[in-house]
Length: 173
Image (cartoon, rainbow, N blue to C red):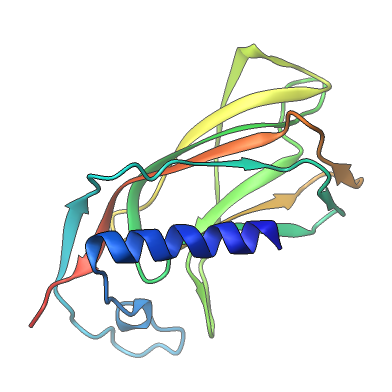
């Protein structure tokens, strides 16, 4: 529930700051329809958009996901994530980070490959990863999924930072 509230606050702050009125359904269709042509413009965010999340106490069963952020109707084209999360003895994350668009009839979530930072990690316990997010056409949804074979209960230090640097908004007219 905390994550949904935080995601809503992020989306409202972004919308209030840049006056976005874009409907993500205008660009993407799940039914094979030709996308409507709306003029989109890249904008660089002039306000801090970095958010910090604590996963403390959250348990994910194998295959279970956690929706972290939904930036609808803002389409994220550039951003960054850093996560300190459980990892195996080889330093591989026990969760997979996903990005894409999830809306009625649409699910384009796809894995994002993180970069492992060995100097700040303890394999078999927790490891630090970071990676860029966004696509040229923009994405709205960011989630993690438990890709291990056992339940994961996140501890005190399991955290994530999420920032947006650039996105798309609809031009008026």
